[in-house]
Amino acid sequence: MIARYTRPEIGALWTDAARMEAWRRVEVAACEAMEGPSAEELDAIRRATFTVEAVHQREAITDHDVAAFVDVLSASAGDAGRWIHFGLTSSDVLDTALALQIRSAGAIVLRGARDLHEALAQRAREHADTVCVGRTHGVHAEPTTFGVKLAGFAMEARRNVDRLERAFAQASVGAISGAVGTYASTSPAFELRVLERLGLEREPVSTQVVARDRHAELLQAIALAGAGLERLATEIRHLQRTEVREVEEPFRSGKQKGSSAMPHKRNPITTERITGLARVLRGNASAAVENVALWHERDISHSGAERVILPDSTILLDYLQSLAIRVVRGMVVHEDRMRENVELTYGALFSQRVLLALVEGGMSRDEAYRGVQEAAQRAWDERTPLRELLEARPELGLDLDAVFDLGAYTRHAAEIVGRLER
Image 1 (cartoon, helix red, strand yellow):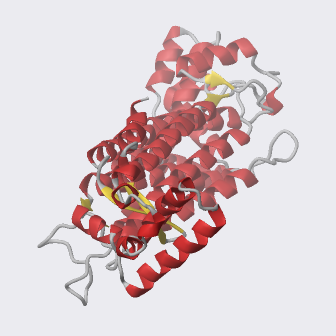
Image 2: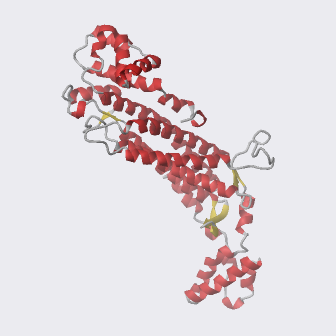
Image 3: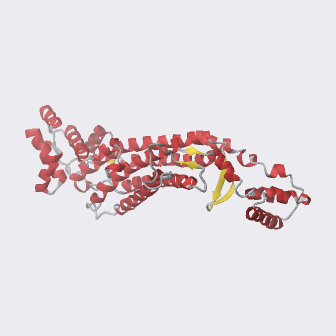
């Protein structure tokens, strides 16, 4: 991932140095778990070092990154280096080390996912009673509250926390099973000893590689989390439109510039960025699914793609979550504008309550529907409050105070938002 979208903590997990350090940890754990090396040799193996530059120089000769790494690390260990990579195959090191990186990345991503959920829940509680228009198909439907709206996003964020927890956990598994996964040069007991040292679970049947459906599941969970962020971002972008202006992204007045040409602009650039980059996550998830079908016990058709999509997806989700948290915590809510927009259709959005009152009064549903539809459209088109039109129809016998009571739409809002505590 480019530096613009990489936060330092998670970016550090995916550097060449970090990747090779994970390889070193696996190689050392394997030597510690085997019976051959002496105590002195183990000390030498633990002290063995590498540099990324030295490995790259060696790889220019071997054309094999793990073999080059083993050569460099073994040379650093002196005579004890003969035990490094003893009985292992490259995938033992690569997949087990990758699990270590995934686990570390998961800790960072999950921290952000939980913070996002809490930020949304906090703003939902704050605005549990803030009345606004609910929209379907982009058109005014009935009143709701901004807190109820945010509670839906918070619940989705909680589901994404759960999905990500499961996905990172099931992808953080290792394998030390040797060529084609038969333990011909090692043993299941040896594998367990190595993985126990690393704190990883075992892939039950590795076929030399850890099955790639695990990584595909992780990328799918990340893509879903990204889709949730995009849904939130899209809502805020719509609510920030000039004609709506119910919510605005945080804007640093006197410092931030919304446009290079038009000083009045306050553009929803952060939520637009979230929307665009979420598409990358979905593309990466598609590539991960393509990686599942390898030839026979293994090939390396997945390898090149994974070196891009796994670091990029975890880095990008971490970045997008940080943007979303900043937007949610700092967004400006224009409650007065929300109330103005409730009145924008001159009471037409109370149409269902009028319909139900007429039906309760004995009118057939179809007759009531047609009459209310005509009156509501007239109110909107002629800019005449629907209540005034109905006041001219005393024969309908409507209790207009009850019909046009906003409290009917908000009376359960606290209960709905309260479900965030469960």
